[in-house]
Amino acid sequence: MHWTARQHTGPGKYEVYERLNREENHMSINPGESWAVNDEDRSTVTDGTEALRMVDMILGFTLSQAIYVAAKLDIATALAEKQRSVEELAEYAQAQPDFLRRIMRTLASHGVFTQYDADNFGLTPLGSTLIASEEGSVRDAAIMFMETQYKPFSKLVETVQTGKSAAQLYYGRPYFAQIALQPEQLLGFTKTMAATSSQMVLPLLDHYQLPEGRVVADIGGADGTLLAHFLTQNKDRQGVMFDLPHVVGSSSKVFAAANLTSRVEIVAGDFFQSVPTGVDIYIVKQILHDWTDDECRQILHNIAKAAAPGARVLIIEMVVPDGDIPHPSKTIDLVMMGMLTGKERSREEFRSLLSEAGMMLDQVVETPGYSVLETTVLAAV
Ligand SMILES: C[S@@+](CC[C@H](N)C(=O)[O-])C[C@H]1O[C@@H](n2cnc3c(N)ncnc32)[C@H](O)[C@@H]1O
Image (cartoon, rainbow, N blue to C red; front, side, top):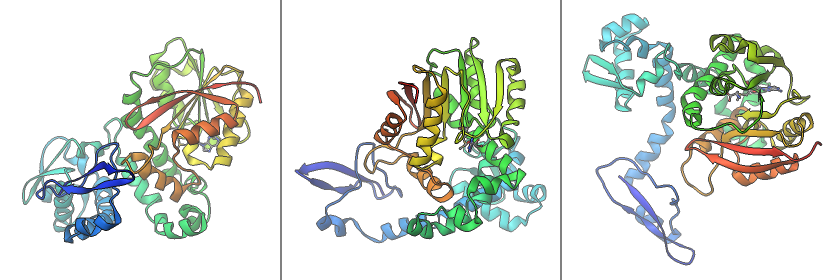
């Protein structure tokens, strides 16, 4: 089923959704449209199909877990070369064939695999994102989210009631402190960030030209993927890679592989204490959304303190659009709420945080997912 929303027939009124196509079993709205309906019209758009759709959404956890099973058992890698029978896959994965068949059938119905017949499955472009060795594979993400975030998310009601993160409630400590205790989980998290960078951010930034400035620092740069990308594109720049002491070391491999070792200084530190000086461009990617407004003010204040007036600060984040327009930032916002103390922000929220830190938002370079908020440090603080 397909509904559209149309704004609007009179002052303050929305026209009721129209059912366009009963055969299609999904709903969507276009950017700029709204889900809103009049109270008096609501009953006219509700029938059994809404309940079915709602149950489908409620059971979303089964899909997450099925993808996790496929990722953990590395099924996509087994299918990378050719289609295989359930028996072959079960032997490869040390799994029960009948159970694995049901996982495969369900995932095939979501386009992750292709089902040729009852016993044979192949890979789709969507499923190939789970191949272990593929650059930018999201297999680590499937494993990391399910192994470190799925169970804590059961505390989300308490989070909404108390304001404490679900990770804190579940683990008894903040999320980053928890994963720091488990080297495998920490590695999984770092690889997930690298994969989302290379899959979702780098292609979008391919046409993005860094502002002028010789020294580029990535603050909280994780494994260095983004800095390596910018330094490879801009041969005249030097890099500073900055992250927590137990994280920053992993970046040296990335810089070595890209032949960048001599152009990068690796600095361990805590951005709540201070950040490196002598930098022309500070990149702050997917950092601010991890933290509260007060914590962001502290990070931005430390950058402004270290920077010379005129230095540029590039905030790379999703920007939440106004209203009920579907946007990935709204799902990620719930991850921030559940796992950390942060949130996704609107353009105005960014503008006011930045101006409080003595930075001016010059422009927002938008892409469908992430945006680059280009900022100038106005004065030393
Ligand atoms: C969400 S990840 C973003 C990583 C990277 N910027 C990216 O977009 O792929 C957050 C990063 O901030 C780092 N981080 C967290 N707390 C930090 C602190 N107090 N000082 C420096 N880095 C920190 C983490 O180690 C992690 O690499």
